[in-house]
Image 1 (cartoon, rainbow, N blue to C red):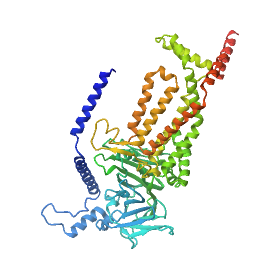
Image 2: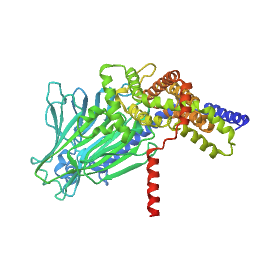
Image 3: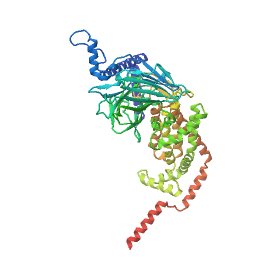
Image 4: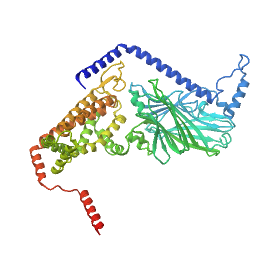
Length: 632
């Protein structure tokens, strides 16, 4: 591409940017537009909730006669409710009251309507804008059993439970063993459904026992399972919705089997569902740093999971809806043991429950996961015991990893030094053989490498062996809750990007991929990466033979700069430190390796007979045996 073409492309790009800036809405207009979008999304959400409630309880509102404006008489109304709800007719109407049970870590609000968890607040954490961190809240939450009773469909989520106690607020202190909150749905004649919530001190786990007392004559005799509907509208808790949405999905564990997940693309505005026909141990509504998990005491028979993106709102991410099959034995008295986990995606916290819930922490797969589990996390936790600054912890973690990789790094540099001192001889080969005979050139170069005992891949293989650790850190930092809202230097939150400059104007090709901000650690990472690439290119002869490849090596850090600008600043800070240490190591290696002596050693290797590899010797020996047998 000539200079005029490049100048033309630059001018076209400048015109597009100026045109976009001129026609883009200002900050006030964008805020007003976003406010309207949030309002529309909120109204749509409420409309969907109303439709759901109407479909499950058609007679909750007072009915009117079709002929005339007068209300139905109280007797007619009671008769209609009795016909629709049977034994549960006394629980159709009531006053929605709220009860709380809490300890040092979590506060659960229980609604008398449905007897369900109405909200779950984590008391040790805040949202990105320093508001109380609530995993779910409001009437959008659904938690109730659906079953047939005398040819009627009963949904407990719409019926009113009665508390079995006088306290509206139950606090579990450190000195308590546990406290309970019982909510009862009466069906008359000593028959009832009871939810008993139990909370221990210093625990994110809330036990729930569903007691079915004398319900065998009410619930259909043909039922072997009871459907449990659990629906949550997931709120946005972090600064970057797109990043948080990428980590938000439904996880589930098959009974006595592995953990799997069900997710849809963050850009799809559709509802997707999946039927799980095998037994399930737990279902989790997982976000980037927090999760709501429903756990079976024994197992769930099956489940149908639905997930829907909420694209037109900054307040919500997705809607999760699960229909879960509870085992039902048709006994007179039966108890179904469940548990809720409302808490952080902290690896050690989840692991202590021994339910494989630590899989909710996205650590990668295969070797990447093992590196994180058995190397990165133990070292990080050890440093966290003695050091309060997470910036310093990352610095020491980087040094530790570099020390482990030191032998590989040294071997890589020595290999590149050998190729560098051989460059004059390679230039002689290139001068003797014309450029149009590239294959012959390459063969002669490889002969030279073989004579002097140099492996041309010796500088690449150690770098490739380091890649799993680099990828492991890429998975570790964005999901490490320890870094959440922890500041260092100019970064206010190491789990999110560090912005030194931002703007509100939408710029094509920039805003969708780079964002409307500049991350300083990202720039430092990119600059030091380019420096290390330049040092490596100067240290090898191959960069002169393949200038196109050299251009690609410089293009890659620029591409990663666009990708990582919205990522965790803790990650880009780690990559920056790793680059700085690599630069220092290369300078130390350069001063410690005598290239003249190295060249003399390589030239001496030419005089020695080329040693055959064991594999080559075995091949030749096998060929001789075949030849001897054929003569016989």
